[in-house]
Length: 256
Image (cartoon, rainbow, N blue to C red; front, top):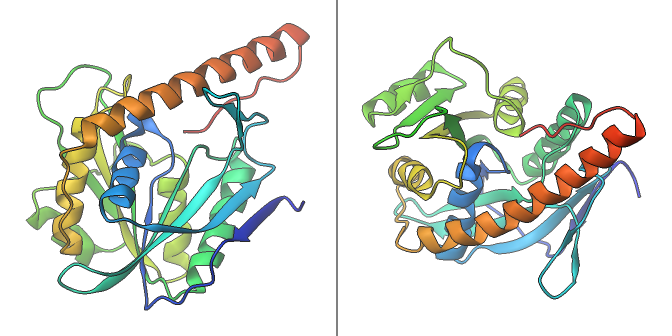
């Protein structure tokens, strides 16, 4: 196996698709939102990405079956009033190291560019560290024209108060160098639990931007499923870190 491999499950043709990324991060807001889109709009998985840059572990489900660390590509065709095609990237992991983040982001962009992607939206959470009454949506973008569109939708522009860590930020930055325009939508969340309300806030804004309909009635169910998955991941990560610290080796940190 190479450092990173993309396994094609179905050969497809798309018409200048819009790319949506939502890998695990703060409150798992983006992942929850994207998983919901996949289920509600019946997206089809067509490729899987495996990499040595993922954490050195596997998931074990309730039946004892092993699940690899993986990123998954789904597609949708002719969605919404504009009949747009989409590629959606989800998964159960991001790369551990900064080098891995850059390498994987480059591989992902190389892959989606083959289908004609020129526009992308990355989804994530913005942690407050304290409870909130209603989740606001914050945004950042690659050009001023998109910023103006976000403002028209009452999305608060995140300015000069920190970066966007991980794939959601890096894909936008590297995409800009390839003339792929886009924005990151961040749902405001306390950050210490799986936040369905923040995911719904993001989906409401994204649906308007993309001119599609997304029913959010089942988000609470999906949030519970995600909580169980994250609980397992955190337990395994803590066990791995305890073993690493006990052996005196370098600590392994997850970049969310």
